[in-house]
Length: 100
Image (cartoon, rainbow, N blue to C red; front, side, top):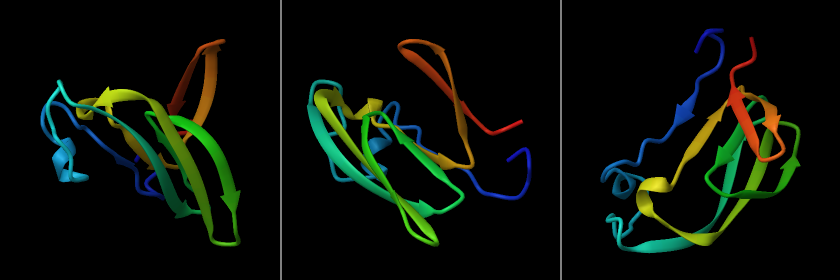
């Protein structure tokens, strides 16, 4: 990372790499919905290709819950975790990146 203090994790599921994250039919014709729970260290934020439904914090960790109700192909599954912040650039669009 630019700051060199914290690690950063992200997924790249195109074209057939979703199968390395979870057991799935990894082809564009097969679509699925999902729910996910991601627990991170307290300094980290998690984002996914799904709606964030809740976030809870404890002393050392944060837990993020996500729900994807619209069926998607496996190559659109995405996860990123790190010391990231967001900026809204329109009512429907948000950009996430490391703080500068």
